[in-house]
Length: 207
Image 1: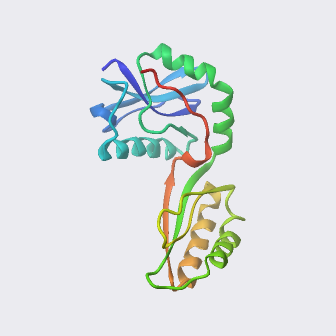
Image 2: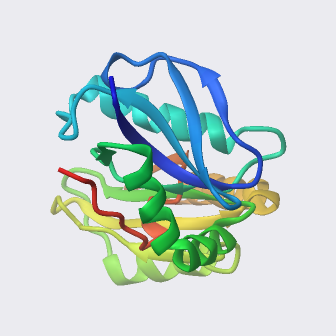
Image 3: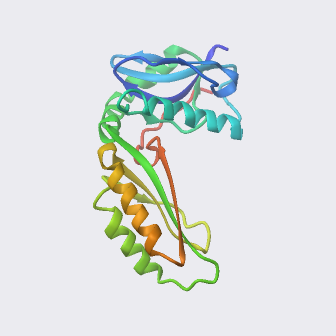
């Protein structure tokens, strides 16, 4: 396994731990350039197939990094980033250094949380009023939020929120209030996730 599969980018101390990693690897570690470290495992291809099992492993590696100590910032990569050599990967880190540093600063001390509001079957709800109510409750607590696709006609709201770890309890309480008050709506609350929705740094894998 000579290629490097990338999960995300961190700053500071290196990472190394044993786990069930993507592509059957068992060790996750960092390849560093200056203070940046790409979190990787070894893989025998530069074009990994996205199975459900490996997608879950990718997310679990990121979650473990995020939960390190009091919480660690990580810029997550989408599934499938793999490089033929350490040198190729370090060249990418070098080229994107300012962008990674900005992204790490933006997500430092924060997690991504997902909220979907689903209309009960046959319920008649005012979607605009619901959206406004959710915004009044959640936007003051969140650092940022972004809208996601309404992929079902029963989906009234689908947003991702970037929330400071210290505000997580307040956000949980706001969700609980929404769950109590809305009879015709189901609140689906997920996370915490690595902040995929709030970083726009992409790196090109070497094919």
